[in-house]
Each structure stands twice: as C-alpha cells, then as structure tokens.
Image (cartoon, rainbow, N blue to C red; front, side, top):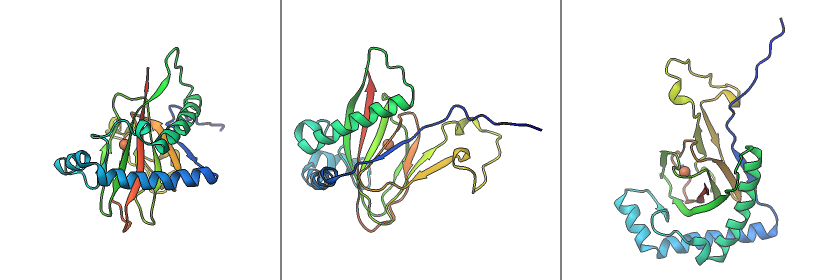
Length: 207
Ligand SMILES: [Fe+2]
C-alpha cells in the first residue's frame, strides 16, 4: 500500500543569531542600556509593582527607545531586515503597506520570575532579541494555535516529532532573534537561573 501524508497549515518560528564583532559589541551596549534604563525608569518600576510584574519591563513606560538610545536604533535596523526575511518566508502579501516597528521594550526577568501565556494583539509579527541568557534561564514556550479546537483529541506522545507537539520550547542563546506571527500564544516559564534573564521584545504592525 502506498500512502503519503501532507503537512499543511504549518506554523513558522524564525531564528537567527547575530554574529560578528559588531554584534558582540552591540549586545554589550544593549545589556548596559537595559540595566541602566531599568534603574532610572521610576514610572516603569511603579507600573511593575502595581501590576505584580516580577522583574522589570519598559512596556508601559517607554515607547521611544530607538529614538533615545543609538544602540536600540541599531538593533531596530537589524530587526527590520530579519522581519522582511520572515515575511518572505511566510509568503505574506503586504500589498502597498509594510511591516513597521510599532513597539520595542525591555524585559528583565529575575530568578524565579515568569511571564504568563499571552499573544500580542494589534500586531502582525512579534519577536524577541535575547541579550543575557544565563545558565538555567527559561526557554520560551510556544503553544499549538489549534489547541483550543482539540477538544476530544488524544494527547501527543512525549517523544512526538517536533511538528506534532502541542508545545514547543526554544532555549535561545544570547544575540538570538526569534520571530513569530503575533497571534501565536507563548509564555516564559520560571527562570531557574540565579541571575537576570534580559531580553528585548517588539511588535511590527502592517500599515
Ligand atoms: Fe510575548
């Protein structure tokens, strides 16, 4: 008997690691900036305390990092190129509109910190650039977007093929860019490292 199985409706996650001397220097600059911005950003610290956010995020307090800090402007230029490459990979038909960086923000997740499951509404492509990933720092966990439809479906085996799994973990190295479509649900499980996990997240809109 001849049989074949087609894989369709696939979910793509883009990964690239910035390489070269300039990328290493840029990452060091970004690490310093993230920590000094977190220290100085009283409004952001207050927002994190009010919202029981474990650690620091600039998400609610600073929305112009690339204009204020040249290292963030450099990163944004690099991200533009990776987002364009991902859009080609996805065969997105952008028409006369383009993918534009709408928001970029810092996340500092201390030991024991988590970031619960979420999507990024009002956005087309989202992603994270990893600045500092100490040993034992959390992977990012992605959820099969069809999970909500699988009401009576059997679970998948523990050793299921990667494209059959309901959850996928990616343990990024520092200087890695990860991109996904903004509707893809994800979370950051508990940071089991004994130091801060530093990342920069962003949203690209289609307009
Ligand atoms: Fe996110």
